[in-house]
Length: 292
Image (cartoon, rainbow, N blue to C red; front, top):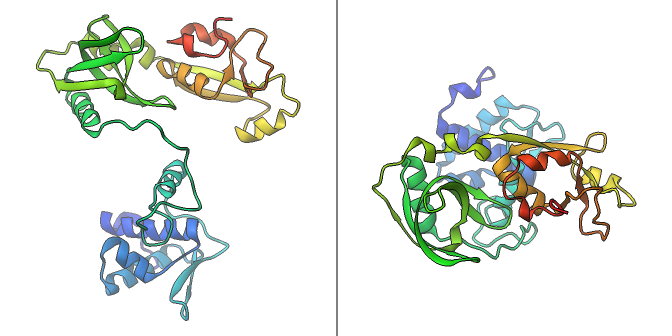
C-alpha cells in the first residue's frame, strides 16, 4: 500500500480522498462520519479511504483515537490542487460551514452581495446554442434603443464583474458584440445556418490577447499597500487577457487610464502604465479616463 499512487485509484476514490485533503487543509480536521455523510459511503469503505490517504501522505494527518478525528499536521502538503476562488465561492454559498455540508450558508465567510441573477432557462438555451454552434432568436431590451427582436450567434458566456453577458455575432448590426443576459425577455433556438464569419474563430477582439501593465496610482501616498494587494513585482502587475474583455477588467478595478493619470481624488488606486494598449481594445467608452 505504501507504493500506491493516485493513478491507480478510481475516480470515485479520488473524489473521496480529495474531500479528505480539502477538509484537512481548510478546516484542520475530518472524521469518518463526515466522509460517510458526504458520499453516503459505508463505514468499512470510509476507513479504507483514510488508510489509503495516510499511505499517500504520511506527514499530512494524525488520528486522534479518543475524539475519533483526523487532524492536520504542521507538515501538511496538499495531495490535490484546491482552487482558492472555487473554495471561497463554495464557502460563501454554504457547502463548507461545517465538515459535512451544511444546509445554511456560512456565517464566517461572505462573498460580495449579488444584485443580478440570470434566469436558468436563458442560460441553458445559450449554453446549448454555444455547444452546438446554433443561433438564437431573442427579444432584447437595450438601455439606449429599448426592445428589439434579433438573431444572435453566441460563442461564450462572460462575467464582466457586474453581470453575465453572452458574446457572439449580432446579425442586426452585423458585428460581434456582448449582450447582457438578464435583459433577454424571450429566447428560442434558431434553425438558421451559422457561417464561419459568425463564429468565435472570426471574432478578432476575442482571439486577440493583449497585455495590461498596471501599477499603483501615482497619487497614492503609500503605494506599497496596493503592491501587496495585487502581489505586484517591482511595482507592476502584468496581465494578459482577451482584447474583448480588457475594458471590463479596467472598469471593474477602476484603473485610471487617462493621460498623466489625472484622477487624483482617491477613486482610482490603480493606473494603466502602457496607455497605448487602449488602441487595441473594444468598448473603451466604459474605461476610466480612456478618452480624456
